[in-house]
Length: 188
Image (cartoon, rainbow, N blue to C red; front, side):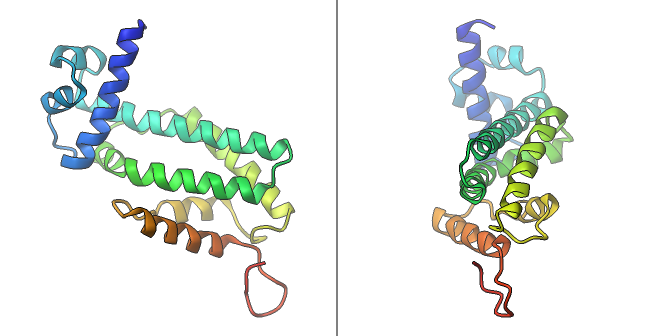
């Protein structure tokens, strides 16, 4: 793909994310093209239908989260504390998910493909390795599973201000933190 075509594709994806967030899944392709600063024909040359466009937005998000998870897993392998990497990864996932929630809702409404299964597998494998190491380090609950993590992440409060997201992250981290052996259930 030529450099200008890559640039236009990126502008279209960014505009689609913003327009879907503002106007929901019914936003028109014309409005997305205008917001991207490209001709409608340029948009359609990259994405023949809105379903293709929304699927690409979601797929791009999943690939970014898989890449970010692999980066955190590599840092753990290189000696960074697993809980530190898990905390930073969680913060990134919360912010990205909260801002991409509208695109995910649009994908569901349009029955768009939700991304490459290999990206989901990459992200899952990387996150599992971080959770496993955090459990070995006794930094998180011994019974913490990746399904628990996904359950909590699936309930991220979209459309909330940063201070609300920060509070949610703190509550999430408190919930997964290792507990003392005593009955007070106070995080370590």
